[in-house]
Length: 237
Image 1: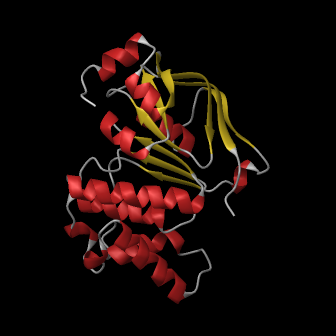
Image 2: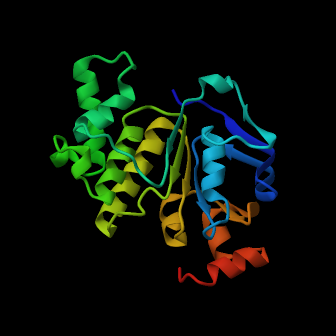
């Protein structure tokens, strides 16, 4: 059964030296919803994902979990934009994500094959990670996410190195995963058109601040901030 909870960001600030790169007063993200995190390069998308994933410490504020669950019980998966794969086979790369899950060998194998099929990598299951293209490496990294049942999924430009066919296949896999697990999914994307395809809600950042938030169709069609209108003016939707 999917967990019911929200992630609350309160007074978050991240600095590099004297430069503040993230400044979010308050932001609530709900389980069962896919959020598109949009904004120009340098707007703070990756920094926010890393802060939520716990791979980057914030200078001020807190990230809390609201609901009938303990924060330590919320399972989080993070996929950085630069996908990393080990020199093992593709199959082994994905299986590593559930190595300590206690699943039987048969169930583990079944899950791995299903995850690889979801991203179109089943035919390369025995290929070595070192032989993969950038787009293929991204698919393997995504399969490592899909093979587990997670509560929060954080993805940084997950299709940046893929062609359109691969992108659409991955988008379908993400939609199916969110529906099945009821997870909170936050996907950073530079393309508003992709945000429109994959997300329920949109959060737009500008210079580390939230300047737009709401249903993705409303944010993209009717931005209320000058920064939002300026960013979206470069895109034809």
